[in-house]
Figure 1: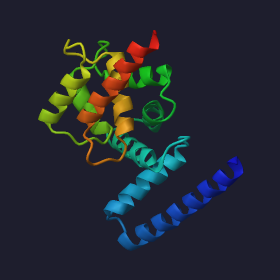
Figure 2 (figure 1 turned 90 degrees about the horizontal axis):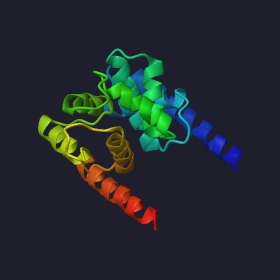
Figure 3 (figure 1 turned 60 degrees about the vertical axis):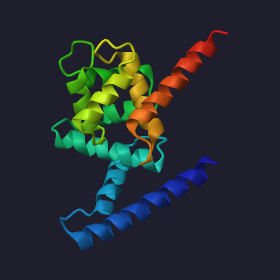
Figure 4 (figure 1 turned 90 degrees about the vertical axis):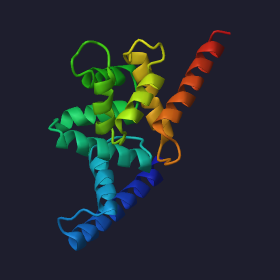
Amino acid sequence: GAEGEEDAFAAFRLSAEDTLGAVGGAVGSMASGTGAALSAVSTAWSANLPGLSPFEMRKAGVVLKKMMEAGYSEAMALAICRALFCGQTDKQMQKAYKFFDSDENGRIDVNELKEAMKLMGEDLNDAEVNALFAAVDHDGNDAISFEEFCVLVKAIKAKGDSKDVSVLSAVSSTWEKFSASFAGGSA
């Protein structure tokens, strides 16, 4: 039941905090890789993002950290994380879309995508960003529409922690599912 889960959550959180304390004490101001990953998890924990897997927790923590380092408010960073990792309701996605559309022209161009990927903790070079943009820009109009953005976000979420799956191949398979559900939906 829910109580057991909450106990497990509390235990996980305590052990993560203990580990954090130990890592923090041992490492001092130098963040080791695991320390950074753990602090990302604890950031997401404290941000009250419900229903996330440990991977999504870490990813959300990275997004929060990167956005706050880039000078965004915690509230803004949280809103984006909720859109990206939690319910993914249209309203939340719309908020994230508007946020990444930094020149507010109602479309996301390749530079805005590059910025978005950076904030989402996806480390892509220019060639990868361009390839990703081409894959996401399904209708080829040199802009990512809201629908296309939703596919991208779902692909990043679906890709999960897999190092073998690139965002690009995740996007392709998400498009396939997306068009399949469209095609099959009307029958």
